[in-house]
Image (cartoon, rainbow, N blue to C red; front, side):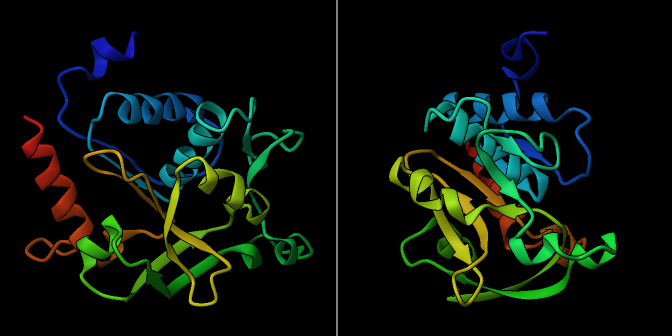
Length: 196
């Protein structure tokens, strides 16, 4: 199916979290489509990782860039376990779980959405943006607008020359309620409605 036929009429695209490689290449193609067609996009957890994979491959020229979860021999492991996680033998021990603080960059979409310097969001993941590739990604325009307080972990990625294109490593659905959605959902839906 051509993506234009499948997605041409949608007003916004959300790629949710998940584990395993099933459907990942399709998700990466959908991220690329949203980026190139200026469709409002929100990536959650694996969705952020697909955003980074697309950007590395198609903007930074890192052919075959991937996550080591899906290809442990990729030449460009832009998503990987952190070095200290690789030593842990118990798989559950490599999960980043629970509520963690995130520092937001000034003048970013993330700061506009949350209207705060620091937010706390809930996590459930093993893989992270590989610190070795942050400079290459940011030199081509990817903005890591949310980071752990010490700046080591990339929590939010966005691009500025797009109506709404953002991914979170955390799970904003965990802090949403029927009448009190997480601000990122409110702004994603608002942007999608403006794209009618």
